[in-house]
Image (cartoon, rainbow, N blue to C red; front, top):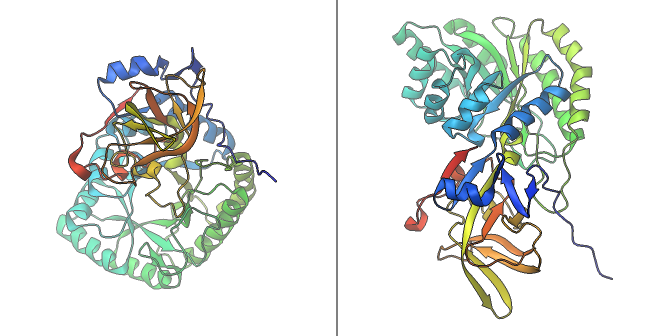
Length: 411
């Protein structure tokens, strides 16, 4: 019996005119001329705006939406997102500098991540950024820095929950973790916050990422709220903020469907009244990165050679894993699966073929598409990797083998 090969979810976010992909209202071929060289990443600002609007439509109005800029820290993207969301979440001193250059109130910027340097902490305290504390030791360092600066640091506790987000692509909580403070140790830490006279804001509880199952996210929300309410009894003051993380996934691979955002929002609508009754005045924040930006971006490389080896077609391009590690399958995948890929200037194409798109690096890992059906391509055609707006260029080993870098544009 022949089995049907699963297909990618339809990539309909970008229109196609005369068989050519359109990005930011411009034909891909013209955009490539405007950029001046390949490879490049292109991010569509209208798609970013639309995604925020979609979330506003389905999430309760009480929810404050934060952008986790680790997903895409390109300054132009961050500036645009800062005009749309309610806060920015950062994970390094470098991201902090970019975030502070936006118009976002520093008090609406939160800084998470283990291993913050003393310089990172001092900058955050001086700017008025909220520090999500990852350990008791970090708390003590923050207190010392605050005294030195004569500023009362704004702090929240990042909690490593006693549960995990089921079916998540990457588990960030539950069990032993380098992230956050184990939930059972948080009560004692909250007492110490009061002794140190730190300005306590609330909790950051994030249990996993890249989840496409609404039921798993709903369960995690219920457990997160219950944990926050339990811990709040030990806090030096009533929490003002509760960051419940994100974890909303997007479809990358064949057979994956889209997250039922309406169901997630409906469940939050049911839960919030009880949360606000137990934690009066708390601001519930959802922190999203990938879900906000991934589908608004593409990665574009140009075919520099068409090669046939023992009957298999290889499209050798000027891009590859050094620019887009995730699409090569070397960023979190156990079994390699293809991202959605098309020939951007021949989306349907008059003739189809099975081909592999590879990069110029001297390693068999440099693979953008493995035996995919695409329009028949030739030298000069443009290979497009969809779902590339998150964890692309900055998540890749750009210096590997010293090939030229990729550009980024917001259109």
